[in-house]
Length: 239
Image 1 (tube, rainbow, N blue to C red):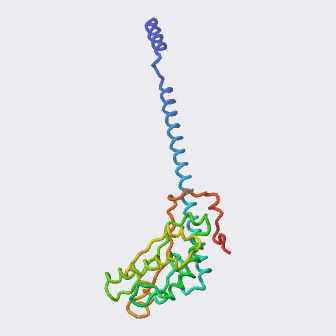
Image 2 (image 1 turned 30 degrees about the vertical axis):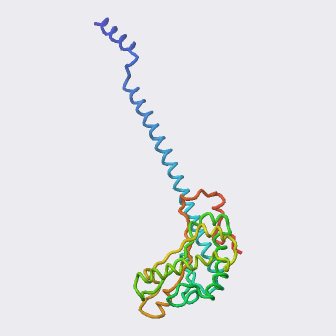
Image 3 (image 1 turned 135 degrees about the vertical axis):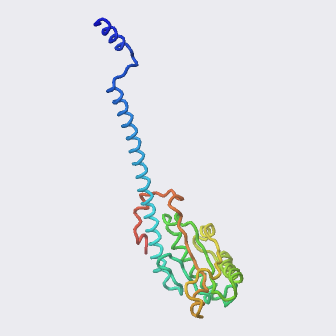
């Protein structure tokens, strides 16, 4: 009996594939630790990506606020309305056009020659800011008199008239003109975005307008120098 047990023990000890319960548990624990380490590393990478996303979003908001602040301050000499939340510039119809017309008045041309270079300079003169400008839009708006289709055509023709005039010999050269050309587009919105009631002549007059707008790039559309951008404060490079 003892000889048989000894023989069985010898065969078990000689089997290289035999594992104790402790060995199995140790192996499973090692696998678990490796998996946990991989998951923790992945979570750390994701958290770092989200942190950078939030930093870039914060930078974009600071850039936007700074641009709006400059627009409010530096364009105060012009007869325009600057939206303090969006930075949209609203120019009433009477400055640029006669009622129902899409041809620029001479006074409107004079206004654009003075206003546009300053507006464009605010947007494009700072390289750290310029790289975040995705689009500059000139957009026409009307009141609701005359029907949607008529006003859609009128508002688009007015926006196109402004865009076209900016690059004529009569307008003349100005800084960042070629940069602006790459970013510029024209829209017509008819009366779908009123800023006042169309029930009164005063309200309709406010709705007949041309807007200058800027759009910032989404954070993932640029590869900024984050360290430099994070130095931008609300009053960045303001004179």
